[in-house]
Image (cartoon, rainbow, N blue to C red):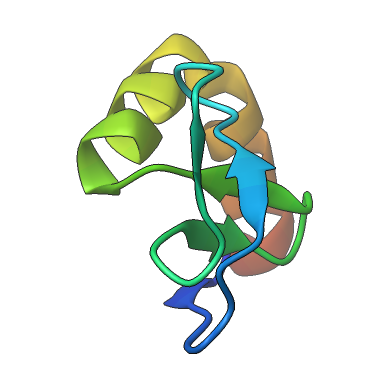
Length: 64
């Protein structure tokens, strides 16, 4: 899962964590699942609620 900030884009996107809207240029983006997050707090809250998905992804990518 790679999170990054897209600069110079003021379109609105929906946060996968809280459901609110935030500017694309301020959002964190998960390229693997194509999700946007308002900020690191929203991402962490979503991750805690979806720990099975996080563990499955980590295991698939890093555990042999």
